[in-house]
View 1 (cartoon, one colour):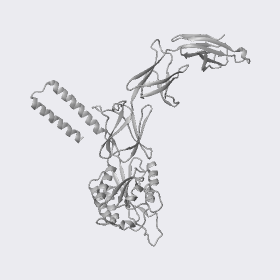
View 2 (tube, one colour):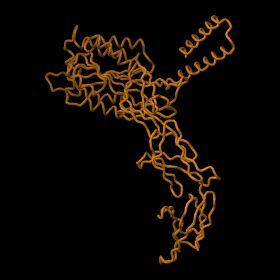
View 3 (cartoon, one colour):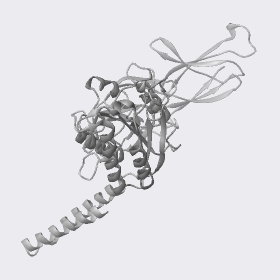
View 4 (cartoon, helix red, strand yellow):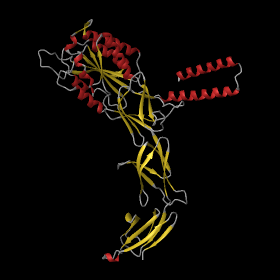
Length: 492
């Protein structure tokens, strides 16, 4: 709201400038300006309200203290430089902390020596459990400064154990930051472990920071998480700050629902973002255009890779969506739409009651939608097959929906057949269509009177008394149905 007040103050100052320039602005000019100011203020106010409620973020640092960290790196040993830079980073985190952040530290390769052996591939331990920054930073600095590289590099095992480090809170963002100078040395599969934990929703895709890592090994980590190569001391410091900034901050995006001309004019449809790895629902919103006619801004976590579903009819799906942190992202989707309207003829009072229409994509049997008569609904531009659930059913194939237009399908008013049978017995009704009989429905065997709402046309009823056991006793009766007319059908 402070930002809103500042911007509002700036516009009031502009108004004072206008008054000084024109001395006595007209009433009309004042009204126009105040109208604009009101709409601008309302938009900014709503934009401020639309920002998401802060979500707890948990950062787990997985720190490599294997024997290879004794290696040389620029001005000294990798372990000493990493200790120094991590300590400085934790100090900066301590001084600019967020109440919605908790941190923890897991180390590996620091409890068991490689010599005389055997190699311990379970050398991994949660040294500092999750807690507020002000509590955890001093503990983490103490542990890191006391580390001495001794063991091997069990990355897959460490990632697997990390799943148990996070508290059981489904509403938090769980992030792993793996800092390593080497690849897996215990025949584990870090890629498989990382992917499985992401699919289960235990954590978001990890960050991997390689310290002086041989370039030929870099590809081994790209499947584990978002890999960053810290080839120098300054690079490590910058990357660490950037990674944490990404982990803590949402960024902005807009979803452009494109019409047939590739302009973002489509709107008023629900959109869902899924975590592409776990399948979890991350965001749901009803798409809208803002006061300036542009797709409204949303706030979105830049860490995940997303699948987006636009709930048009049929749905539009986009996969592999990556959000660039620190930038305003534009996510386009082709969603040209038009309207379908199904109605009963205007003459007379409809006797159908609640009549429905099945909508399918052209040439397909899957039902996309069931549309009630005398209502509109939007569909993607294209061709559809319709099946109206009247008696008899009416089919319209290759119905075309065009951009921003309404396609209207109209059927005639029905009539009523009042059917009287001389006694119980099986009977069915057929429509005469080009010298062919098309089955319409079966009647109630035990009922002697029925009323059916039928489309206009020529029909036949075939009946046999229940007690008659020979086909010679079958009775055929012809009748016609007209719109808004009740026809008496007596079987003699």
